[in-house]
Amino acid sequence: MALLGALFLVLLAGAHAELPGCKIRITSKALELVKQEGLRFLEQELETITIPDLRGREGHFYYNISEVKVTELQLTSSELHFQPEQELMLQINNGSLGLRFRRQLLYWFFYDGGYINASAEGVSIHTALQLSRDPTGRIKVSNVSCQASVSRMHAAFGGTFKKVYEFLSTFITSGMRFLLNQQICPVLYHAGMVLLNSLLDTVPVRGAVDELVGIDYSLLKDPVASTSNLDMEFRGAFYPLAEGNWSLPNRAVEPQLQEEERMVYVAFSEFFFDSAMESYFRAGALKLSLVGDKVPHDLDMLLRATYFGSIVLLSPAVIDSPLKLELRVMAPPRCTIKPSGTTISVTASVTIALVPPGQPEVQLSSMTMDARLSAKMALRGKALRTQLDLRRFRIYSNQSALESLALIPLQAPLKTMLQIGVMPMLNERTWRGVQIPLPEGINFVREVVTNNAGFLTIGADLHFAKGLREVIEKNRPADTRGPQASSAPPPSTAAV
Image 1 (cartoon, rainbow, N blue to C red):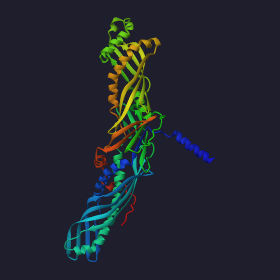
Image 2 (tube, rainbow, N blue to C red):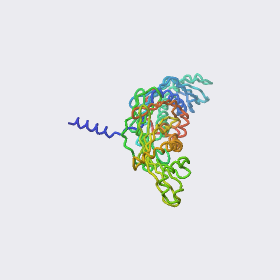
Image 3 (cartoon, rainbow, N blue to C red):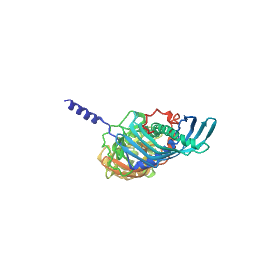
Image 4 (tube, rainbow, N blue to C red):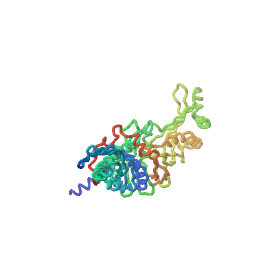
């Protein structure tokens, strides 16, 4: 009985689970590009390591090592890969560090000082970033684990007390190696928990698209990593800004991602586009009114000729009034995605009236328009853009079949008016596009769009339009200039 109850709860939870409108898959092919940029950033971070002064005494010898600076870093062998349980693993083996420090030695009344170069070899770093969804729906680095070790240190001592330094070198280099081991992981912890999270803060989550609608890219659950990719599920829903709490129920087919040949794949369901069109509908944007000179001259003449019988019955003061043509979408348009292409179905009312100055308008006719638009999607930079084309168009009367027959001569001129006057305005807006949830400085290139039943996928490669360092420095929190500004990391496992 308990088993049946548990099964019922699982099924109930699944029934109420929110479906994603957008999915993104980062494949292992992207990691080589990310690794190249990430290692450059990591090298710059490790060069900021500060090592405490090293003081000691051996017999009558007193020594002080201070002002230790990292002068160069070589990470010759490295690997970046996905690991299940939401982790991104970085392994660095057999790296090396160049160091420069100040030496001071006192033996009885004899003093020696100066600067010397040293090297740390056999640098090994194993670190894992755990990615998760935070309470606002943003992807975050939630934990950094780290193991680091330096296997060998060498210092080329010289000067008056060269033999003495060689005697003390074992104590000095062992001490420096211990201190260096203790500094690597805090730097990596700060880089992940503070600096990389400042980069992830540039990923859009919920915000305005324009003055009418916004979009919600909240993560629905933690990212899921396999050995070959990282999958993320986003709400992918538009909403009218005036109704921030409104949401369209998602009953569309859930998008599926199977491919792994490109660096990144993005999938959008029909719900993604339906929520956009319903949001603009609710915001009152899907209407157009043309009055007087705004109505094309040839169409104005044709409309007046078509409704001549009604116009001549009006008073002379109204007959020559400006003509008004109003299109108003009657219900939210709907998107249909098939392997053959993407179409948008629109039903609108078309009202034709005369507008005498200072008087109520005089309606001549009201008809219904059914239109079908084809939609071609493209990714440019990190914006999803849409190009619309009017494919099918028909008008019919709301009054009678006989009036519908009389409207046949208007079909071609009205369609031409839509193609010349309305479609460019729509495409000007849709081609501006909407941003995809990627961090600042990263763009899509060489995209390929594939239509499926109920959703479309876009495969692309990634390109760093800005360096990782540049973006992080721009968005770095003001009070986190060093590892000490972040929370203390867990103790690292480091060989001494």
